[in-house]
Each structure stands twice: as structure tokens, then as C-alpha cells.
Length: 378
Ligand code: ADP
Ligand code: MG
Image (cartoon, rainbow, N blue to C red; front, side, top):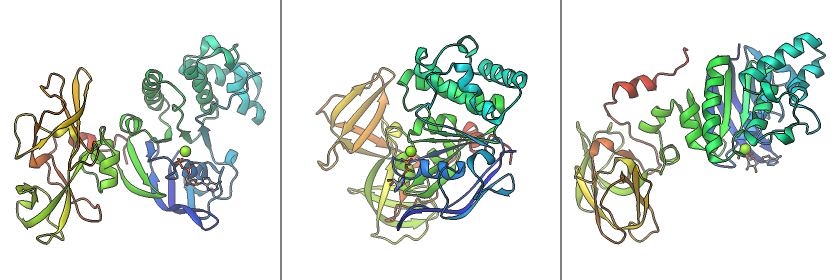
């Protein structure tokens, strides 16, 4: 129960195609996160699965049954929105019970289900209160309770934590991860926040203007992004991109030149010719303060001391703060004082002129290898 297949799903508003042929299999019990910048089509895709928006073409299949023509209530899904959509004049109990009342469920069964959901969500003491007396986090839990009592095959969440403050968001991330373990239900969660995606997902689907850019486990996307879009979107602060020139390929990988400095990158050498412009990617947290295979000089213009870490922002070639290094908390760096940033070849990513990544030959640690395996059995 709770398996979803999207085959070549498309959505157009007039001549404007918003969802451009999405193909995806979501396994039973999986926690899948759709992530991407605002406007990339996350909500539209979720609403199509829910049946709230019509599908222009392609099939949406839940547990082997094509649901394109079924209304939302017949699809076995429950959706939680960013705006909690609670009834202010009803108690918490009645808000959670609402879908069961619509179904006409007997009072004793209804009461048992509402109380069970309230227990899971720590709302037992709040059942007789009105939403106006609750905090934002508690209100969102009521909305989730209303979804739980329906016992859906698939839970759909559309940015449910975006209205909460940062501390509460972090708490609710943990609560939702626990809820997923407890209910063992399929969950599809939409967010523009890559931290939410990284922390909660079994598998992340990165959307870029209506198409899937890459699908993978959080660490798979972090270590092996398929393209510059994913490389720049996953990870915070974002990956640095440096223009380099190809010097040639060998068994050892691809050799590139950055301002007269040569670096042999351990990547699968495909389609390269000497002189070709490429882009080298290096994450801020991978820059070294004590050497590397090459060292580049950058002059920080802004420094953020976060305690555990120091983040230095610099301008390469005078183009704004386009370079960032995450250094130890006690790093001896100052604004306007050149900093030697070491780059190790093994940490680098390489992209062709179309932004497509060369396959990295990186040795992952045992923890990373295990994390690459989806937590949910196929
Ligand atoms: P996201 O949730 O990723 O921020 P949406 O799915 O809400 O993005 O929107 C994707 C695109 O579809 C946007 O360009 C948006 O303007 C467009 N869009 C959404 N709803 C409609 C509509 N009813 N009519 C026309 N365009 C729409
Ligand atoms: Mg949205």
C-alpha cells in the first residue's frame, strides 16, 4: 500500500508547460522529498498527485490503479498545506475528526481514531481547545492529525513548516521523521529548503523548471551531483564554481588548468578535448587552510564567525562575493588579508560546458556508502 508511479506526467496552462514529462517511482513506505527553487513546479506536481489539479497528459498510478480520473477523496491520499487550513470555530478534536464526520463514521470509532492521532502528535491535552489558543507548531500538528485519521496510502505535504520560526522548524523536522518511522506510510514532501530535504528524505527528487534534474539519496546528491544545478542547490553554502581549461585526459582522469596551475581530477574522462572550457566545482567546506594539490589566493571581503565554523566570502575577478570558504571556528582569517585556500583534487567536481558532471571516482567512506543505499527496501 502506498506505491506511486508517475509516467510521463505533464501539465500545461494554455501553451505554458509547467510540468514537462516527469517519470518517477515512489516505493511503499518511502519518504520522498521534492525540492527545487520557487516556481519550479513542486506544488503543481503534488496537487496533480492529489487530484486537485488536472493532469494534461501521462498517467498517475497509485497501488497499480490509474487515478487520473478519480476525485481527491477516492485516491487514498491526504494532503497537508503550508497554511494549516483549520476551522477556527471548531475544537482541535472536531478539526481532526472532520474528514471522518464527512465519511459518516460511527462515533466510537471516530473517537478512537482522533485520540490515537492526538496521542502520536502530543495533542492529547489540547483536544477541547480552539486553534486560536495553539502555537503555530501545534496548529500544524492538528492539520497533520486530520491527515493521519484518514489512514491514507500516501501523505502529501506542501511546505508544511514554512510558516514556523527556525527553532520550531528544526523540532518539527525531527517530529515528522519520527512520525514517518512510526506510521511506516509513504510520504511525499515538498520544500524549497535543501536542509529539510537532506535531513528528512530517504530519496530526494530535485526539480528544475518542471523537469527532474536528479533523483537520489541525500548523500548521493551531495557527493555525486549529476549537474551544476544540483551541485549548486544541494549543500550550504553553495558549491564554488571556477572556470578551468582542459589540458587533456589520461587513465588518471582529466587534467585542468586554473590560472596556470595544473590539477589532475579523478573523474571518468569522457568527451574531452584539450583547450575546452570546463567548470571545476569545490564545496566551501572542502577548502583547506594548510595546503592542497593547488593553492589559490583569495581575499575575504566578508567574514562570518559562527563559533564552530568561520565562513569567509571573497570576490574572484571582482564579480561580487562569488567565492566562499567554510573554515574552522578559530581560523586566522581577516577581511582584506589574502587567504591561501587549498584545493584537493579528490574533493573536486568537474562539469562540461552544458553543466553535466563528469563521473567522480571518489572513494566514499563506509558510512557514505551505506547512506547511498535507500533506507527503504526495494
Ligand atoms: P513551486 O511550488 O515549485 O513554487 P508551482 O507549482 O506553484 O511552483 O508553480 C509552477 C509554475 O506554474 C509557476 O511558474 C507558476 O507561475 C505556474 N502556475 C501555477 N499555477 C498556475 C495557474 N493556475 N495558472 C497559470 N500558471 C500557473
Ligand atoms: Mg509551492
